[in-house]
Structures are given as C-alpha cells and as structure tokens.
Image (cartoon, rainbow, N blue to C red):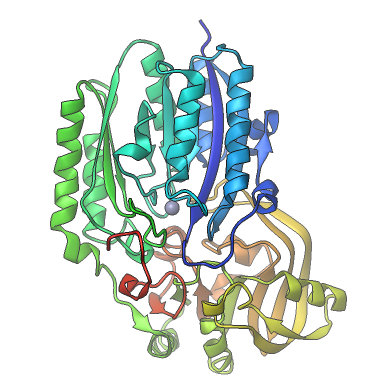
Length: 485
Ligand SMILES: [Zn+2]
C-alpha cells in the first residue's frame, strides 16, 4: 500500500523587541504552494528536503500543501499567520481523509501580536482538522521555545541537533522515518518534554562550544532506530522572544511508554540545568572598540582573516561595527558582506558600475541598529534580482534570495548591500561577488552560530563583540515582560 503524506510548513523566528511586524508580503516572497514545494526543496539541506528524501526512497506519495517562511525578524503578523494556517487546514480538508499522516515544519519561536505560541496553535488546528488518530510528526528549529503544551497536538516532535544548522535535512528525515515506521506498525511513539529553566543568548547556543557540545553529543548518542527506537532532541530556545515558554527544553520520543520518555527527557534536562553557569558564559564577549582593536592586532600577525562578530544585530543592517571599521580602512583590508539596505541599492544601481555615490548606509531598520552611516562609495558590481543556490554546509542546495544587490568600495572597504535581509554565514557572499575571503584581514559578520561551519576552521580568530542592539549576549539588559530569565 502506498502511504500518502501531507506536507506543510509555517516558519518564522521572532525577536519580540524589534519594533517592526513582519507582514504577509514578506512571507509571500519566500512562500511556495503545491507542486512548487517539491521543486524548491527536493535535494536541499532543508526540513522539507529531508521529508521528501525519505518519502521518495520509501515509494510513498508526498502531497505538498504550503511552505510559508517569514525568515527571522520581529513579530509575525497575526492576520498573515491565521491566513496561512487556514490555507493549510483547507488543503488538508480538501484531501477528505485520503492521507495517512502529516509532516509539518515549524520554527517554534514564532510570536504574533496576539499569540505567545502560534506554533502550538498551528498544531492544534491541524490536529482538529485531521482528527485524533492521524499521526502528525513535526520538525522544529533547534532555537524553538517549547513547553509541553507546544507539542501536545503532535504525535512526535524533532529538532535540529546542531547550530550551525547543518542537519536540517537530517532532522526532516528523522521525522519522516518515524512517521513511516509508525504507519508500518513497527513502532508506537510516545513523547515527553522537560525544561531545565535556562535561557541562553543565541551567541552561546553554538553547539561546538563546551559544555553544550557534550550535551548535544549525548542526545545524539542516545538516539537510534535500529533496535529500540529512541530520538532525543535538545532545544536551546530563542532568548529574544519574550514569551512565557522562552528557554531550553529536551524532547524524548520513544517506542514505549510515556513514562520512559519522561525519564529520558528529565535526565538530559537535569544535566543542562547543572551546567547552567558554564552554558551561559561559553565564549568571551568584548566591547566594540576593544574587540576591533583585538581583531586588528590578531590580523597583523596572521595570514588569514579575522572574523568580527556583531552578533547582536537581528536585521542584518546594524552599523555599530561598520562605523568603527571605516576608521580602520587604512590599517586593514576589510569586508562587510550582506548589509541590508534596499534604498542604498537603488541609488547605487542608478549610478551603475564604476559610478560614485554618497549614501546614508544601513541602520534604517530600528532605533538600536546604530543609524545610517554616510559614505562616499564607488559601485564595484551590480547583481539584479539576485538569487543563488547555497554551497555551504548549512545552505547546501537551498535558494538564497538577495533581490537587487550591489558591491560597494568605500576607501578599499568592500561592502555587499542587499535588498532582502540575508545573513552572511559561509563563503558564498564572497564568491557570488567574485571576491576571495583570503584577500581580507577583517570580516564583519552578523551571524550567531551558523558562520562557524565555514569560518571556524578557516579564520585566524573569531572576536565576538557586543553592541547596544536587539540581540545582546547580556540578556539582563532586555526589558522582558513575559519570559522568566
Ligand atoms: Zn535556529
């Protein structure tokens, strides 16, 4: 018998303290429906790509409904989220019972104007649509904020093991395999969640930092589906969503009893709680001026570039680091990949390659982003309506959409400016503009953890700087009202 599996996704990571709401038009730019879901994701390192590889290999039938993605920004618009939910439910109801299971991709850290846990609500309405018995397996981001109610309507839940998220496809595969084995009658999943009571700033959620590395390895080691089926997911949570269930969690899925799952989740969660102090100070963080001096000094005695990490930027347009590095343009060869500023791109494109423009660059998204920096720039390259397929470990095969984009030369400091907000995490942002990262001394990135897959083994050093922005390492500086740091 060929199993028929419905696929849907509704994905966004929301930082509550950013002032702008993400509306439907932003989601729509990265939303696909029906057959286009297959074309977008098949063969890519994404959750949907993972779902599809298992379904295809098993000879099951994938019935894609919708994959909507708002990226990572401020709150998701309630009306937009409600419309996408309704679209998924209508798609499921239109199948009129002709499906055997549902595979769902959620982030787990979405927040709207009205809902603290819209992902839970999405699961709830899907459960109501398909009835109490149909298996629903859900794959979440490792940065999901979950409590027991978040996953109550799911049959089983899974999270990425690693940040950088190099295993998004593998996570989709874990969820899909669990579904197919359940449908085959080989296993009967039971699930439980435990919370260590820990809120980790994103910068410390990198899974190659000790002791998180050991805890993540333990979750992976405990998992397996050869003899006794068992799957452990450790979630770091997302510190910048001000919601009651903000924080880390552990989910255990077993072929057995709920009590077994509860004991496993509680044990690993307890180890996280014990490691609280070390987890919350896993890497040194410097003030901006001190960090940049440190990076320049390191670059002076290195043959490879040094990464300066302006990690508190949540919109890819903060100018705290850029402003200070402009003052160092004569001391070092500096690159600033993927600064988000559609207005500056328009002005530069009008001037064309070789043209000179004066720009109020970056810092437009929000008050804490540092404000625009006035620069005189030469337009070094133009890319119209630009989309490429990623080649890095995390984005392999995935579409990266930049919109109209330009490369600017400001006194030798090279800045690629994009119309759509994208974070630079690997070497693609250089290669796509015919640059070689080896030609630079200092690289300013805004990533939290994902850059490590490409840069950790390559850069001469990584210098983390804290700036007065929306995602700081010191979360006690944030005006939480609902989370319990
Ligand atoms: Zn994440």
